Length: 165
Image (cartoon, rainbow, N blue to C red; front, side, top):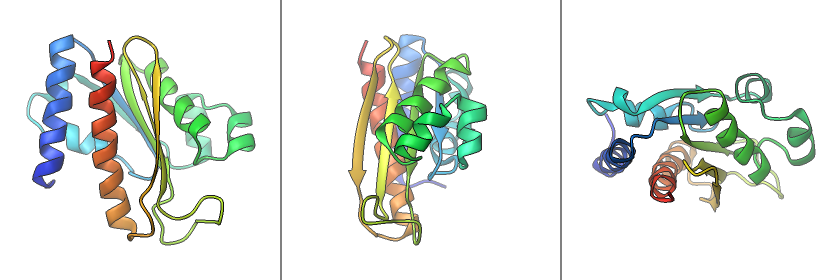
């Protein structure tokens, strides 16, 4: 179902989480559950994957993850503060101690000069409480390619977060 690169990254995340006895959660917007799907594609993933949140709307981000309305009003859904709040919220609203969050503009529409198509913010909550952030501008590659690039970046960041103990 997923390309070999994604499978390898997912297996790496699962192995790191398993070695550390850590449960993980995902909080996804523009990827619509692809990260959770990639992780759960691997047999045995239930030992470390707690849950995935697909929070496409701002209402879902607030209701399911506790993203403050003021954060969304001040910074928008596609921003570092929102990604940070999503990652922290995924841990707070689950049995996980690590998470990854993705929010971006996959296109083809929805972009602006300030936030163009292909802009994606990632945040990962580390088991030690820190939150890592990455901003990527993948460009207007097409919706499928932006989502695939975001999937890979999210898995890489989650693996990095699991190393940060």
